[in-house]
Length: 94
Image (cartoon, rainbow, N blue to C red; front, side, top):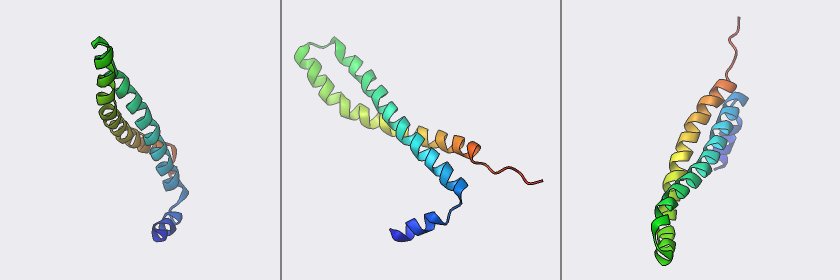
């Protein structure tokens, strides 16, 4: 593990900045994606009766959270890496 940390310290600041932006974007998008997926799946439960509505919430929430957060995290990391690459790119030397 310390070998990996030692090699990470050898990277230049541009690579570290791009990685930090990508990972932060992935975490944020994963959270937002999970919340959106849970809200959308819970809308299907609105037509049920009281007892069945609660069972519907309990059964659909973990699946929706997993799917939404995974999709959001992947999308966020890819888009964050793209944006981080644009922000942290080197200027051409003349």
